[in-house]
Amino acid sequence: METIRHSLAHILALSIKELYSNVKFGTGPAIDNGFYYDLETEKPITEESLKKIEKKMREIIKKDIAFEKEQITKEQAKKLFKDQPYKLEILKDIETDKVTIYKTGDFIDLCGGPHVESTKELNSKAFKLDKVAGAYFRGNENNPMLTRIYGLAFNTEEELENFLKLREEAEKRDHRKIGKDLDLFNTDEEVGIGLILWHPKGAILWRIIEDFWYKKHLENDYELVRTPHIGNRRLWEHSGHWGFYSSSMYPPLETGQSLEDLQNKKENTESEQFLLKPMNCPFHVSIYNSKPHSYRELPLRWAEAGTVYRFEKKGELSGLTRVRGFTQDDAHIICRKDQVEEELKKVIDFILFMYKAFGFDVESVNVYLSLRDPKDKDKYAGNDAGWNFTESVLRKVAKEKKLNFKEELGEAAFYGPKLDFKIKDVLGREWQCSTLQFDFNLPERFNMTFVNEKGEKEKPYMLHRALFGSFERFIGLLIEHYAGAFPFWLSPIQIKILPVSDKFIDYAKEIKEQLKDYRIQISDEKETISKKIRQGEMEKTPYLLIVGEKEETAKTISIRKRSHGDLGTKTIEEFKNIIIKEK
Image 1 (spheres, rainbow, N blue to C red):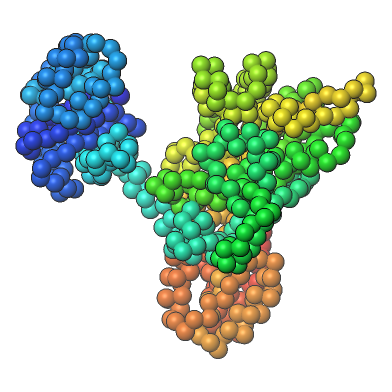
Image 2: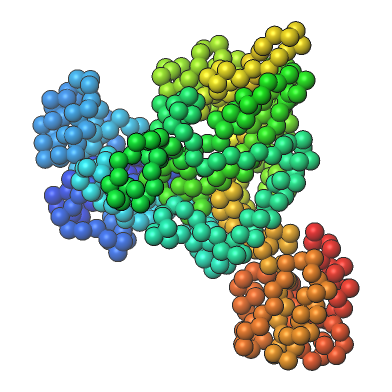
């Protein structure tokens, strides 16, 4: 598939060459679900141009044109691409004397391949040009901006159609759109991009999830801790974050004077530097080191829903899934060496329980064992023995728990290897959520010890874990998974009472009092009942209760259930029996 997509990128370039004059070509790789080509043209290429280009590509494919591979010297390549400045830039970085080119009709590209042998191998009905965007040459904002044309490509026309349908459904489920429609959250540039403002309904949704999180942690023998949002520079130097994690951290805050002192240009004689915390772990270590510990106390399981701050580039921010301030559902397990495997297994069980509780298919969970790249040891703290042990234990536990996992070199955290869990939503899209990290470095750096059964000091091991990853990302995932139509127990507003007119608001209040164990809202706007019903359905409220003269007289309610429509007239007790089944 990658070969087909790469070949289609060349056909795209050939089509552009035939349709436009003086084209300067950048690069054109295969990517997930398709391909793209970056180029520069005198006449702008717009979305409206794509049909014409696509038609030309189909014409070329029918001609049965060969993809001819050839090796030439670097000097020959410079002459060949003398009018292609971007190809010449790429040639500068090639150290070998020989380079590979591919010829397809009148288009010649500097490319290592592979490609299909001929255009006749390409299915002209299984690709589609998708969109036009701008892209800096080689992704560097100091380079010229090129036009990027994206294409989609699959093995069959049916696969392409299925992808387009899924994407259309995904766009409808976009948590940013639904979040606005349901009045859950927003961002404001004056507050700061990448910082989420939770509205009342969004805050209630958060609280429901957090309360469930706390309850299950206490049931699983975790203890709760709380830590500050900032920490002294010395802490981050000690932990290694200052050196190994600086690209994701904000610069220090100068303290020792007030804003007023600074504005008045008063000399700061007691300067200290603090940093916004990117992680909670050094604080938990500090709590541990505040007193001596015995082997009998271990394992210690300390959990915190702690807000952290990480530097993300503006262009990488996206709704709830990529933000600058977020709350990790964090915990650290400090244990003896003989307890490590059992604690790892318990965390894995906890992760899978949480997924199931929120309606995800645990059978489809993919796990990635992130290992250190032994060729790039400067990126990691610690010694070979520690890395070899922790990696082997994670691998063993993953096998024993029969996780569907694969290994990834170079993806470990700087302080230890980890298991990353990815779940699939209702559309089959994969999301990074839980992480389970095995750390032997922080105990070493902070000289964490406990007294073992021999009365000697021994270093513990530390497990870092987050079940959701972050509340923000997980809520974004839930919004898209359920398209905003949350299960009854998760819905910020579970029941909405719709009085037919103002005369029946008092009766609506009586009903609300009888159902006070649930999250209820009375629709008291001066609108027609049909408009109130439409509004309630747009808000994806699980139950709408309509009350008018008939209902007040009979002490009943007319019930509409989300996705089911009219359930008829019931008494309050009958309705309670219905919603008991929803819990």
